[in-house]
Figure 1: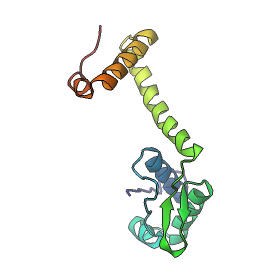
Figure 2: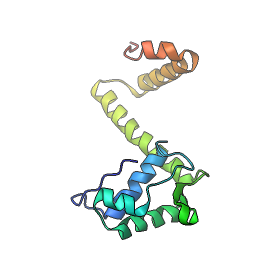
Figure 3: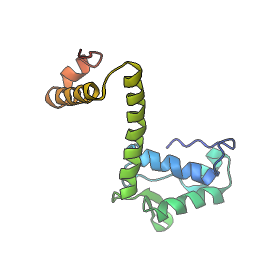
Figure 4: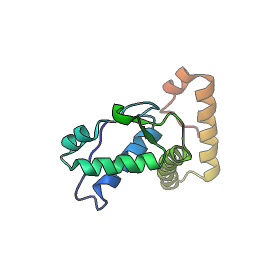
Amino acid sequence: MQIHVSTNDGSPIYLQIVNQVKYLIAAGRLQPNDELPPIRVLAERLLINPNTVARAYRELETAGLVTKRGTAGTYVSATRTPLVKQQRLKILSARIDVLLAEAAQLDVSHDELLALVADRQRILKSEPAAANRNSGATSQ
């Protein structure tokens, strides 16, 4: 699990940890029942106080994203929470914003963009190998 914290970020370090773990779960890089690093190990790796990591883990537990198993460690919850879905949609929304901005710069209309997305989806569903071959192609 790759976590990076910055004192120049402007947000508290525990929140940086919380947000990064949320992202890793939403992106599928942390799967249900994956173990998070022990508090002391992560604190040493990040060069921060163990209480900061403990606070982040408590926040994640309160949100239902992780569960503590006594002295066995902290694990990603086996049940999906609505928050995880919200995080995934937030990630996609950011990518859509970039796509919409690029489409506007390239003078591609909303209808043309939607048609292109629908076309790409059809290709991906019907022939995954063909989609990879045609990934650089655009329709005109």
